[in-house]
Image (tube, rainbow, N blue to C red; front, side, top):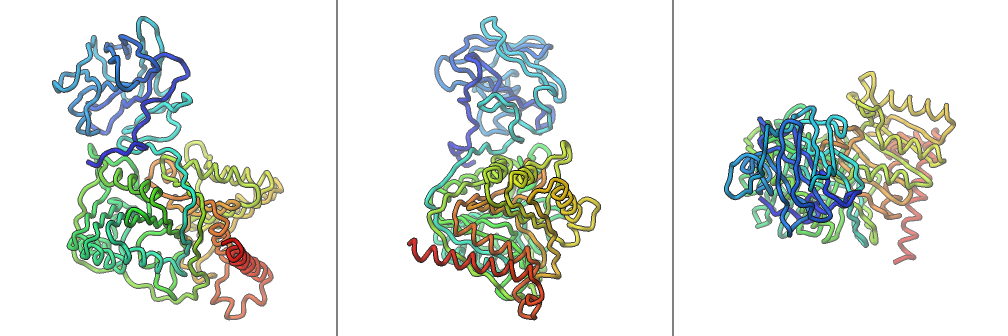
Length: 559
């Protein structure tokens, strides 16, 4: 078990609205059958003396220690709690271990899964009460926690999940790139140049070219660790098993997040897509490690964004998140086997964009489900433009409101230029409520309210791109590169990874890519003469050329 980094530890020093003790965490409906690892945590600003917690059917009584942390955890079964969390609780109710002090109890104190209430009394004063489903909505495996401002469940926290807080890194250098044009070479160079460590977290991995490079790295002494999703939609691709097999033979440590039942992982899907090399380089992308995600130069593939970031502190942050997920419950050794490999892409494509380096950037990591709300904050802070390129967007099923889409619509209402470009691949348009209906609905809303909002579906046949797999946003001089699709599952339940980069160079680069895609043309289409008859394309490609020229001019005179 890797040590828990400080910034990941559940905050035990939250200040309550009152000066007395308060409920901090409650875990009533656990993954473990019988709920033997259920627990409640209380916090305080000063030692409250002897306390009693009642659930209406029984009570537990304990006296917090005079010194030490300003919180304590009372678990039902100390040994079961340790099995799940890797440490003993402060107290236990049943007598399972001499290493854990036992509270005194009367009646039957055991929290019900769906409906219950707790009252916290210290020195004869009732300090706090919670009831569910009123205070929070119970869900199996969810830890219900209280934020610093007293709000319960500001985000979904499943058992074993991290509690990341906002972190920002300054003066970061990097290189932006896009698929299918030029991202592959950037990623290959990172792997080839690695000397000490490579940490890779990716949803699916079938590209044997990348696996061969990782095997070479492992064989030359680089410590290679790979975390994959063990239950992707449709199951693990059969082409992934030989990749796992070859990596294992080379000595790489390959694991799957695939646990079920009592070893349930903390995330619905491990959907992140990033690599950390030598404790310094972070490569983050919207793409899986597949042939059509990172095609060789001159061949067609997905439209995807990628960014290489060079910063030791940022790399340390990503490494700590990786190790947390790599060692969490529900992660097991991957078993591969020889077999058929992924087919190479054969369709030709004329690249338009080359990688572009930048420096002096401000970078904020975005991890779902911890800090995904930062995406909405980024859009809310925009004043000029919000250009969104997404594989798909759906409203949330329960309350019908996607906070990121709502932020974009509100931006348009205050005069910001909002453009939303969605994928037109068959499985994103064949239903009755997907991308084409979303675009129609948004354009109808824009016409009705007379706001600066346009939505469009990018169909593959018009551009030479196979599909739009991007999960990106350009908001003024900031750009988001992320693995997160715009649906509730990605934002609230998956492990997703992204970065918000504040850099005029990086934002302008992706803006030029966006404009070319928005025009629904490609360089090869232009070569056939189509652009001469398309005023919109002329306007868009001219603007993209001007943006690139301004980037080069700015860089020349601001070195």
